Amino acid sequence: PEHVDLWLPSSLSPNTRRSICSVRLIAIEERLRTAQCSDALESLRHILRGTRSRSVIDRVHARARAAASKYRLARLAKLSLSGPGVWENTLRVLLDSDIRAYSDPDKMRVSMGRRGTVEDPGILVMPDGLEPKIDLRGEARGRRDGTGETRRTLSWIWRVEGFAIGEEEAEDDILRSEWAKSRARANRANEEVLLIREEMRRTLEFLNWKAQWWEERGKLRTPLDKGSLEGLQAYSMEQAALQRQLHEGFKSIWKQPLQDVEEEEE
Image (cartoon, rainbow, N blue to C red):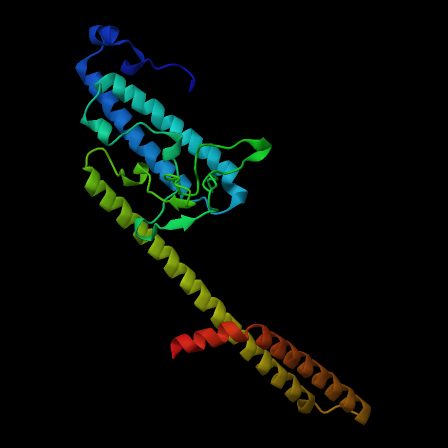
């Protein structure tokens, strides 16, 4: 059933559509296509935010292609229904070069490449020697003047929030949203670091307490003979020494992280 053609108004020629379709039906599909365009762009932004590891590039690339195809089909249908208009300033023609990851405009900078070369670090080398036109790293290659400079720009897809609002307002909304999400991720990362450092500190305290606990165990019980007493004390001292050895080993490994958190508290 999912492969059956629905024959929506956009599937028909303009003359046929005017003769057999009601104006209300055409308006309904037009709203549907507008929503599909916005939904596809949101999917693209969500997908591109996840490109942080080369191990997932192939999978993300395929999903980005699917979202781009969905947007292009929906836009063609809307163009067939609405014709050229102001809406094209918001829902633009989507080029492969437009599909690139988000880059903070406040942190965009000119990066230096090898002088006199035309290599583009934003192009990903894919398996079997294929180079996709989709840039998942958020960099757009600017003019090449022999200086080796790469200028980074923000793709228009990150400035489109929805069809009903203006471009400047949409840009503000998406940047505020991205800033809030980035801040939340940074706060979670800082919290995780603090939790790990606290676990380190508690582990050292536990090992120190456990060593003392074993030392006390050799003094609590009263064996029947001298040999059993010596054996119990030797075993207790051995276990205590093992705990202290672990304590010193971990303390040496964790010295710098724990020292950093103490300096931050001061």
